[in-house]
Length: 366
Image (cartoon, rainbow, N blue to C red; front, side, top):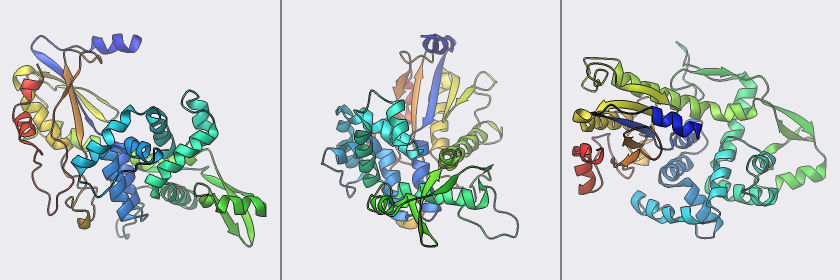
């Protein structure tokens, strides 16, 4: 209740609207990009990004129910196939499992955190196995990130002058040190062979000098997994802010859109919250959505993906008289069309109706 009251307190002037534009699934998309950047798998990176955009939770639910999605479908058909799975009973459990597993939460931790979503640890393990079936690169990437952090003591950082670029360099130069990533505990032969036979555990058993050891995660282990997606997302958002508010000479500058003052109310996680006059709301929201969905120079992708030379991230937008959930209404903005090839070009709506929304967003804001 307190949160709702607080949101209602952020209300628009009589001639203005509150607008929130946020990156859609940015951390999941960036996790997929990391599969490619960190040398895990280009193909699996592309598939993960597509599912993050079209419906990862629906894809895992479909797999769980025995009707997996066909990734040969184009984005529109894939999204249409996955959307109905949101209504399945198991969907909430799948959603929790995907979010928790992506950042390394243990099965015991998932059961403890979400006791209402799982009958027991076996059910949590079953759902997680289907997630790994949909995203087989995820456990490999987790291990690679942890190994890198343990070996050098940190993740990220800029490419140093005169040094060869490393796949572990951070696209925005951020660096974080980690002191307790993983350790090894002796394991008997029976346990070792049991773990080696399990898809979910085989990467956590190693043989060193003829002896088996379990890989045990330390206190920093989950933090290493969150570092790249979360810090790159922060860099992407800050770059968008700079493009919108830093240079008054830029055609994308909106720093004076609120009657000569900044319309920026704040940055909330992965979204930009604005207070803008209705008379220019369509123009401001068009600029913000275009800037936020522009190709990201720091995030190159392979030409073979057919999405251009650099990654783009889609957005969602809402507007209303105040910031409460009941007042904010979704604004139709063009979704990114991934199934294109060639050099980056101007983003085009899929349908003529979307084109009209793009050209006249004001009609959807009042």
